[in-house]
Image 1 (spheres, rainbow, N blue to C red):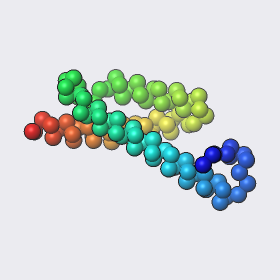
Image 2 (tube, one colour; image 1 turned 30 degrees about the horizontal axis):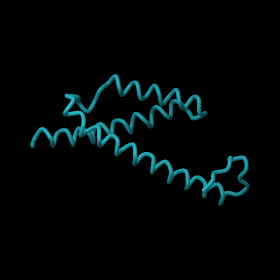
Image 3 (spheres, rainbow, N blue to C red; image 1 turned 60 degrees about the horizontal axis):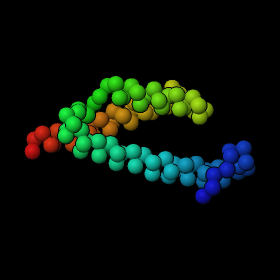
Image 4 (cartoon, rainbow, N blue to C red; image 1 turned 90 degrees about the vertical axis):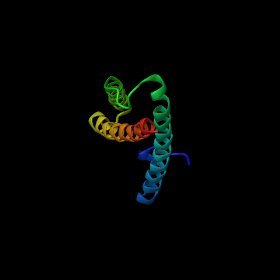
Length: 103
């Protein structure tokens, strides 16, 4: 589905359809991101790395905030959303890494 500019949309039904499509695309992208995080949990033990690397967390948050500014997205909201996602993904990694140390 080709997305229209919001200004080109004349009805709520059409607008909702586009929002639903955007949500589908976002979930698909987040699924791919999660798969990358899962791979990180597999690679990190071999490189002696922990799940949480604070400098990396801050780097990602700074990049997201900067990108949000360029894109016209609320940078504070973007940083908050990513901070939540990162915390959940670190917890996911820690569960995997914890299982590996018990084996």
